[in-house]
Image (tube, rainbow, N blue to C red; front, side, top):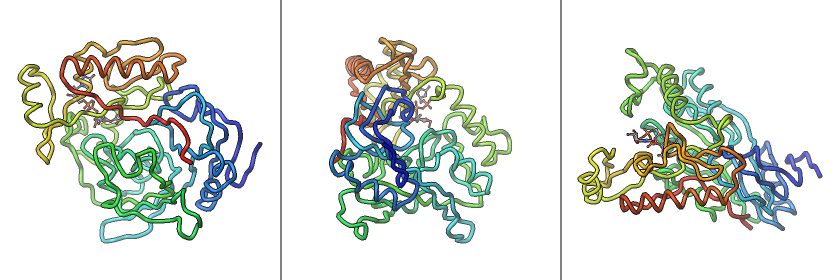
Length: 347
Ligand code: EPU
């Protein structure tokens, strides 16, 4: 079955639509390229009958073997400068644009601010969902507006809304769009970028790697090099980036752990809490490079789980729990999974 109005096919495989390459199939898949096609897909008979699962670039999800749902992957394109405010540029971008494509285009146009987020996999529509962040920048800091449609609305007229960042509950790898019962489907994101570079160089070895006279381009290239040296390219080694969040604990708890384990990297937060390096905790427990069946923790970055064979969700859960247990026993910290587990459709 195929319907071109919103790029519909059924049944469909999702194995190549998730960067962990988990074997997964779904009842049907829609790939709308416009807002009206997205609305149509959300209101189609299969969507109303079976429920819907929204998928972006599939780089932060764990999919089950079968989803009895209409999976909708918004493919709305477009990167447009919609306003010039002094040296600021407001850039409206369709949800279906590949994130790193936006990073490259913005740099080439001289719109700066996304360079630290170079080479992150995924789509623009997904970037606010988990508030992607790397090397001292979180995307929430660059977002001015998110346009989204409420999949539970009865008429198109009431369905569309724009969110300001303060309405998005942005946090560390969190937003109002991440919980499974969130009804909003993002169609575009508007960023505030600048023609004047304001470089963020204080994370790890970025300053050193960006050269003696750093520019947005040299920062982007340095970050591309750093990421490629420790993070596996999902095109070659299937993965979903960091598999656990860095745990945030009280200052007192962090001081106690550090007293027993002086090597522990700790990052004090503005609100007095302390972030711990989950990769370090996992490595200390002996999991770096270690496999259980077809899944392993990557040998160059212990925070990243990789699929080395034909892994299924059961294998992933098994390794997740084994790591959580040993980190909890040794350090008293419960690691929280970062990617979203898609368990079923939203009706
Ligand atoms: N570390 C180890 N062993 C490891 C990995 C890390 O000891 O195997 C130590 C490092 O030596 C360092 C500290 O842990 O002292 C932090 O490591 P790193 O700078 O590599 O960053 P991370 O905390 O492991 C986070 C993000 C990444 C992001 C990098 C850079 C999370 C969950 N992860 O990783 O984001 O690229 O910082 O900003 O916050 C992602 O979310 O998918 C992701 C890749």
